[in-house]
Structures are given as C-alpha cells and as structure tokens.
Amino acid sequence: MIQDFKGKTAVLTGAGSGFGLECARIGAKLGMNLVLVDVQQDALDKATAEIEATGVQVLSRKVDVSSQEQMEALAKAVEQRFGAPHFVFNNAGVGSAGLVWENSVRDWEWVLGVNLWGVIHGVRLFTPMMLAAARKDPNWRGHIVNTASMAGLLTPPNMGIYNVSKHAVVSLTETLYQDLKLVSDQLSTSVLCPYFVPTGINQSHRNRPAEMADEKATQSQLIGQAMTDKAVGSGKVSAAEVAQLVFDAISADRFYIFSHPRALGNVRARMEGIVNQTNPADPFLERPEIGAGLRAALRAV
Image 1 (cartoon, one colour):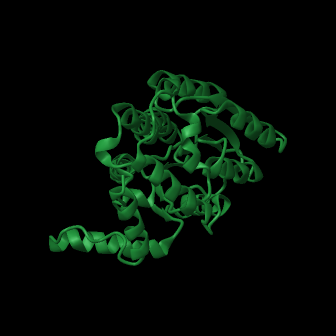
Image 2: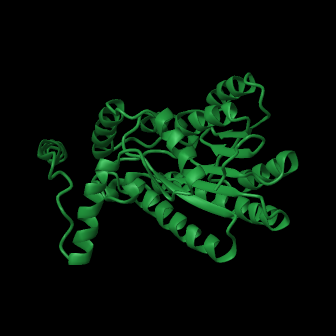
C-alpha cells in the first residue's frame, strides 16, 4: 500500500476526462509526477495545461492504448523520464451497446482493443518495471488499478461487447492480484467497478476509429445508446468522488472499488443463481418498466 504519494509517479490512461482526469487532479494536489495519456488530443491538451499549472512534473502522450507499439513507446518514455511508476491506472475505456449478434467484427475489435487490450498492455509493460524497482528497494511500494465496471460482474442485456470486455478485466485483475502475491509483498492491485457515473464514456463514439465511419448504427445500438445516455446523465455519484475512492483503496490496499455498493445486491443474486444452478434472473426485476420498454422497442423493429 502507498501511504505517501508525494514525489511518486502515476501513469493515468484516459486522463483527458472522467476518472483519469479526476485522479490526475488528486495526484497533483498530493505532489505526484503525472503521466497523462489519452487518445483525444484536444482533451489531453486541456488536461495537461490544467495539471502543469499546479507546478507538478507532467509527461503527456497521445496514445491508442489498444496499440502494442504505442504502449511500448509510452512505457519506455515513462521509464526514461521518471523510472518505474508507483501507480498505474489502466483506465481508458469506451462504451458499447446493441444486441450481441448485431455488432460487427470491427465493433468487437474496437471495444475489446481499448477496454481489454489496453489493460493487458498496461499490466504486461509496467508490472515487470515495478517489480524490478521493488527488488532494488525494500521500501518501494506500487499499485495497479484497472477500470472494469459493474457490467464486469453482471450481464445487462443489449450491451454484450461491453460486458465481455469488463468481465475479462475483472478476471484479469483478480488473477493479477493472486500472481503478485506469489512474488512480492510490495506491489498490489485493485479493480474499479463503477456503475452509472457521468464521465463522458457514453459519448465514446467521438473516438471511434476512422475506418468505422461508414458503419451505420443498428436499431438496437441506437436504443442502447439512448438508454445509456439517460442512465449516465442521471448519475448522482461524481467522477471526482470515484477518483477519491481509488486513492483511498490504494492507501488501504483494498481490492474491490465500488461507486454504488447498493448494486451489489444484483451481483449477489447472480452469484446465487450460479451456485444454485438456476437460469439467469430477470435483470429488470426491480425496475420492470425499463425491461418492458426495452422489449417493446426491440420487438417493434
């Protein structure tokens, strides 16, 4: 666990907005060196200017986290500038909606590329660097936080690619936790599972690859996008509050980070269904009007 953040280095992907930007703001107040990473240049430039104005050291890089080459170049730049980072926040993510069979191969490649491969690259590149630093200094401490979602613990309908990507991040991070415990007591990890929080992820289509511009959204994707816009827009927990939960978890070496603990009732119901070998429960049991509206909209197509 990291108790003193001053002078430590944090790598934050998706730093141009949402959780990444809010973590950068907290890190700046704590006197950290900050590596800001985003694929959207204008958002990155704005975040960089804000954080640099606080007086902390900043390394800013436009990176597509799904790219092996770009992530390897980032890792090299971080090591050359600051050495091994103490906090890595594999946070960049994109949203997705639609019936599973209606999503194109490019939809799958884009969402899994950012949400899953971005985390994979962050883990495989920075973990060895951090472990090497730990071996050299018994007082060195590091922490990796991977952003998943409550969708990584549930299976809400009409958003299959997103669910798959986030379930994979939960599994990867749980395994990373166990693997790290085998080799070191100086490096740990956490998984962030937010529910609906206003972060801008519902506008992920702004960063869709250019080669996908000719793909027309299906009716189920449009319906899912509208529902997500409404849910995210009405979120009561802010990205800043979630960012503080991230730092609290690092300090306490707490693995699971939840923005909406009350939603864990749905997780419990899902797990009980698995253990009891019952069919998956109705995800709209507590809000039947939402399920009825979604069914009606999709069957009217």
